[in-house]
Image 1 (cartoon, rainbow, N blue to C red):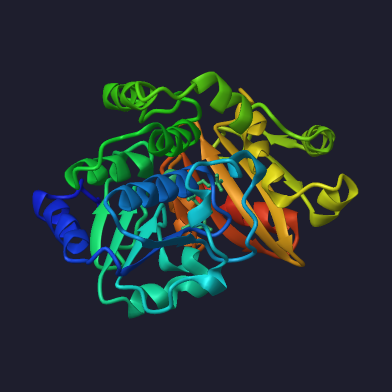
Image 2: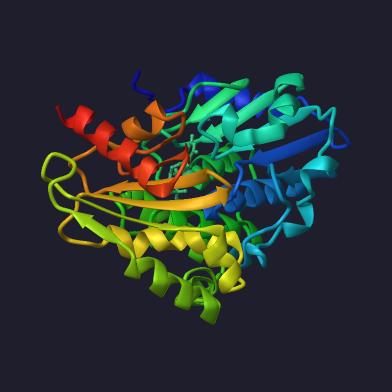
Length: 337
Ligand code: 5GP
Ligand code: MN
């Protein structure tokens, strides 16, 4: 099924759901497990917008360990963040950000299903259509594009704090305005955000260009074990590598540093498909897939219970790294035949 952009009726329903609340009502914001820049940025930017509308009780959370990756630790609105155990259990409205399927909500899925009203803001083509009012635009470069539109519909004026959150979300999900969905509208949104006074250079240094020394050494080791398979993916080539919890421990690094490793791997010219297999527990791996265009990697991810976009997707794999990669190789062959 191909998703289309939200209809006028869906935007109106989302606005009505917010307007139906009193300023003392509880609003719980949730983004996906292992949150990235778009998940946190769109959630906190929208949360700040709700505060500007006078809502006093707004909390933001994500499932799993309550640890915000360092690049996003200084985002405005971080004071709204609570550990998942401190989320409003009986929120009047639940709003979900950047989540393609309920499995990405972990233990928080119950809060959503129990809520009297809910909104889902997302941009994944693989979105499964869960939740109440769905604002899912697969043409949007980031969930923050959807969040900014809803803020505008609600009459919230952008200020520098809201803008910084939305800008970080936009910059991370477009690969610093490099990827295919980087349209005129994306640059126009970036311009509106920058016009509030934020400093893109400073934000980029903090978000993209600042990693611990140990993370660089770890990256060197992980790159060193990369394998190029020119014959894979129907001759379009696949490059893959993996990183273990032991690697993280040896270099005293937190898990988020592994998420950037796909970027150098995906730049390999001889491969259309790139894969980084990142250990999350014994026998459990978070798999990042990228394509340069010949292959729709979201199909591979969805068939393994994950999701994502045509050119960037992921899933949870089990066993040893080479077993996970065997499965990817086989699925790519199936996909291409
Ligand atoms: P990344 O490789 O950067 O973690 O994720 C790439 C894209 O795939 C993102 O849009 C992300 O939301 C999606 N994705 C990654 N892992 C999973 C997963 O396990 N399940 C789902 N549904 N989507 C995923
Ligand atoms: Mn996103």
